[in-house]
Amino acid sequence: MTEEKKASLKEKAAEELRLMLYITAFLAAVFVSFLTCRRLISRGFGVTSFHYGFAVIEALIVARVILIGKAIGVGKKSKGHGLFRKAPGDAVIDALLAGVFAILERAVEGLLHHERLSARIRKFLDQGVDEILGRTLIMFVAFVPFFTRRELDRVPGDRKLVGLLFHGGAARAKA
Image (cartoon, rainbow, N blue to C red; front, side, top):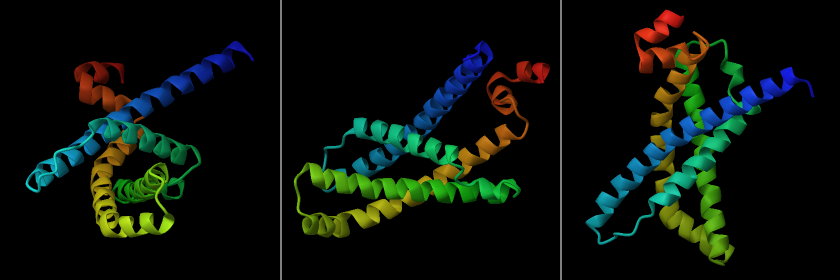
């Protein structure tokens, strides 16, 4: 492998890691906020046990799902559309992916607890459907500004928007 290819792979890996950390931080903030809201509401019913570590792990997994979706070209059909159409479209796709992941998470949880399939389905229908629909809706709403920012950053290129947002005049001087 040539030095140029190694440098290119290293740059791609660094960019992928940066994007993974950014998405994970964003999702962790959303999931922890959602969990805190549930905790505050549930406290009135005597439920006090919530695990924030699971929210961070889930953020890592969903971030990876988003990056895999991006790598295989999910949402590329809408590339020629305007921002007000592309960002919500991408948000719908990734919110649905997060919803599917939540269903899979419930299935794995049932398997780990050695529950029968009928018991898992009954438990899911009794408790999980509303929660997963609510989580998917929250993910959609959270993803719209996330994908809007991503598209705004993509258009000027070279992360100039992020530089402008976080570094002010220094980014304009480089541009």
